[in-house]
Length: 286
Ligand SMILES: N[C@H](CCC[C@H](N)C(=O)O)C(=O)O
Image 1: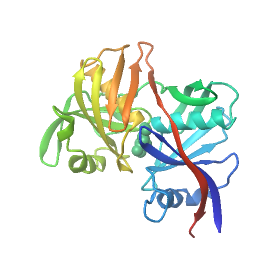
Image 2: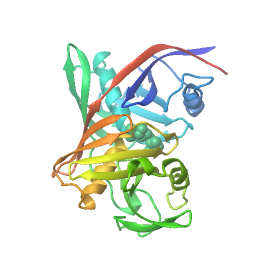
Image 3: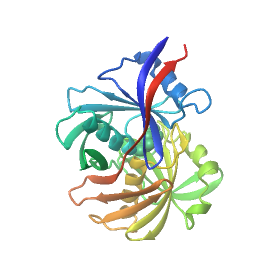
Image 4: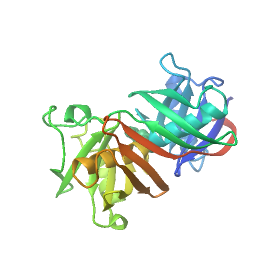
């Protein structure tokens, strides 16, 4: 019987099962299956996926993220805030500011402590990637997709695409409560023009400082929040002249708010909470 200790954590309701690989051992080939198992709300723990906190030779810690369909993502904003909280509170790091390695590069995390507990985390998510070749998506790889017409399910939409190390396509809607998240989301997620699939975001512009946001995530479906998606939405909104470059935007997600700024220096800063839900031992069914 394989068993391992886990911590369930969430960032604005985007919840994952975290396993500390400084202490536990999981078989590499079984990781997609383990992610699907623990994420199953009926026969597992129930989560949006699995996140591994690993040793790294490039940073203090490394994060790997698996969606609830077992696919491995290359970045996870809500996951990074929770990894930062875990690393500080379990003394995997000795500072309140440190680097985290992801499959899409290094990010810089900075935690805010209250009585030795991490409440808020700011992550410098690095620079957005805007070329079609970087999303990746079909078309001229040297071009960007900003407010470009694309047909999905027989209808023409104007979309913008941004990668935060993982792919995002942003649709603007007049009323976030009417956004076709569960109907259009899964169609776009698997559209063949996105060679690696895509996270699908719906955004209602409230003002030049506020966005409403909903998401259909690649590999997980509807989640309460998507940190990389919220960063992509702010970058997209600056590119579409809805919000201002270098100014902070409040993004209202289903699970709560993130403060996001696409800095004039070029990187995207994301600030938000990270919470522990529970800890336990998982008995992996063979
Ligand atoms: N579904 C995403 C990974 C999780 C991203 C999201 N949960 C976040 O907080 O950024 C992907 O496959 O690219």
